[in-house]
Amino acid sequence: MLLDNTKNGFILKSNFELKKAYFLFKVISSRTLTNFGKNILELSLKLKLPVLFIVRATVFRQFCSGENFQESFKIVKKLNDKNVKSYLHYSVEGLENEKTYDNSLKEVIRSIEFAASKDILDFTVFKPTAIASSDILNKVTEEKELSDFEKGLYDRIVDRFDIICKTAFENQIKILVDAEESWFQGAIDDIVLSMMIKYNQHNTIVFNTSQMYRHDRLNYLNQLKKLSIENSFHIGIKLVRGAYIEKENKRAKKHNYKSPICGSKDATDVNFNEGAKFILSNLDNFSLFCGSHNEKSIYGILDIMKVGKMQKNNPKIWFGQLYGMSDNISFNLAEEGYNVIKYLPFGPIKQVIPYLIRRAEENTSVKGQTSRELQLIMKELKRRRSN
Ligand SMILES: Cc1cc2nc3c(=O)[nH]c(=O)nc-3n(C[C@H](O)[C@H](O)[C@H](O)COP(=O)(O)OP(=O)(O)OC[C@H]3O[C@@H](n4cnc5c(N)ncnc54)[C@H](O)[C@@H]3O)c2cc1C
Image 1: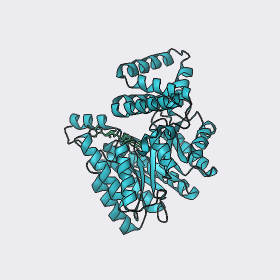
Image 2: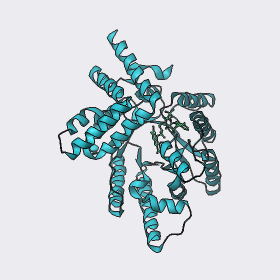
Image 3: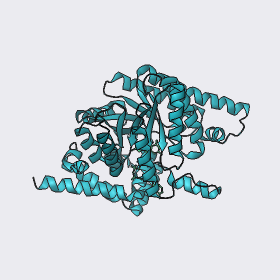
Image 4: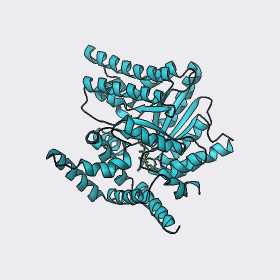
């Protein structure tokens, strides 16, 4: 099978790096060890103990591309040599206030301008809550009345989205807008829709994200298609399953409403695959950025492309994976000529620690993914030993 080729999958990893990755995924696969590591790390940072060098040599190297643009660009070039593209994200999470939103806005603009200055970077990304208050977005989503002060804050949010999308448009860099929790995603969807209408008239610059663990998202995609025909614009969709399942279900239970999440993993899988099929059947209207590590879904998309006689490098179809994960998918698809792109988080080590902790915790809860990583690394180490 295409994605089982570990020689391609780990082509950029030395034996030492593979062994290190094995050790890391093994630790991460244990909830006890992950929690222990997290607590020790937080305590050491509080006590100002010199632990950052350990973080740098382990999780940081595995999941982040560097501390700044220059360091990250070295990784971008290495990946590009194997036909794997990159998109960079300054993954620093901080306090939420108007000052930090304006600082994040500057960082996003910098990342667009950096991408535009290099001919091997086509995409960039931002997380709405880095530039916008989730409370205001929540009120707008739930159609609650805003005070004059809040209206001012909301206008500023729309301005920030517009500045980002306009800069992306002027530099012809595609911009992915991450999806977040459902209780404030409605406002994000509306703002991104207005940006698509404004900046996707001739080609697809702005991409919204559709989380297919939500049972209303096939409807959403259908609605978008109708709107794109009425308003003649191109739709960009990053299709993902969704990252906030525990929070979503917990909140729905607490406030006693029906969870927006599909009732089972199987139902999410069906919804995701249907979403991909719908988009691929409507490529006149849509571009697809498939953000997934699920091999079955990817094989499904490859089948649809084959049956539909779509070119492997069709500029409207992209496959995205996170840096440090599922290299077997990225490098094998790229080797076959598909459009592949890695999400590269970067930033000063101390400030990307929340991202790294989330990565470790997510891998602990996504058991199947971690054991797949371990199994593939083992297979490759064995193959190298027998050569
Ligand atoms: C490039 C890229 C960009 C991403 N951007 C975003 C983003 O903007 N917003 C975002 O929310 N996430 C984002 N993600 C994360 C993504 O949503 C998934 O959490 C992650 O990729 C795991 O899903 P998977 O498709 O790889 O496959 P799998 O590992 O097969 O699926 C795991 C996913 O299935 C769903 N699931 C698991 N158990 C159940 C259950 N019991 N009932 C219902 N559903 C279940 C959950 O969504 C879970 O994350 C991104 C991922 C990638 C690779």
